[in-house]
Image (cartoon, rainbow, N blue to C red; front, side, top):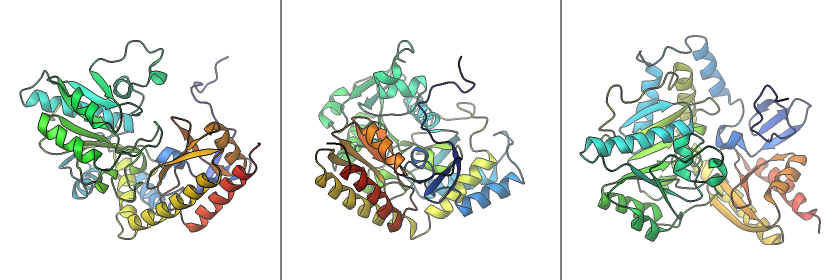
Length: 390
């Protein structure tokens, strides 16, 4: 008999009860150091007092009105994102997949509005992940996720990630946009070579196509800057964000330049829930913390420390680990042994981690992580590695 909750998840043997900071507590009393952060969502950790206060206060005033009304908190959040990014305008949605979907619509609409309706194809990268809607699945092109859902949506081409020759060769007269994650997450925690994003920017400018970044996982502070592409100084025309934007409350956003959003006029897109008062309160509270002068430099410092410690772990246990990958606090270790087995053993010792493509152990600590939590995590990692069966 099928359960009441559709059985699409292979769930762990953990019933989450409550959380505090970097720690998650199960209903049976077990305590875990949470280096999954809800898959890069709870960037401020669990039950951050400022976030709790902001959402609670908003919930006592007004939850939802729809976008028929002006929503002051939404307008403030949009202006703050504009002030701290490349963008001129923002549309709020509920998830990362929706943010990517809209980003693709913006790119196609731009081409149509500027006299090129024939330009509709999107070039994506192999190993990417953009969500689980029909369009975002097609944009990533991963057969694992496409299987059984009929023909993929038409209009998407794919090239190898980090391969500029393939990217340039793929651009044609029907190409509307290039879609890329500045750091791939689900697909294997892969950061591109230095200069890759700048080269994509040049290709887009030379060919008249829209450059779209998916920073749903790698954005909102996880790299040590508010957005991962800032490290290279190669701004997109359109960008999708979500996950840590709400600190656990569902909210996503599509950011765009005025030029790229030229076709997005009244009625061209909509969302019932997107950017409602509760979601906007969460987003503003997250930015209150992330925009404090010391916050991102501290993330960067902790990322350097964790990366250094993990690098030593990989060197010490070559029969288990092959390569450290990633950027900032989006880190991965390509494993020699099954990564899923490593995740299971770490969980039994009290450390929560994830897997990613290409047999990678994915490590996503909250952005508030400190030296004490890193020490604790490394003690568990080293114990599991040391005791691994011969």
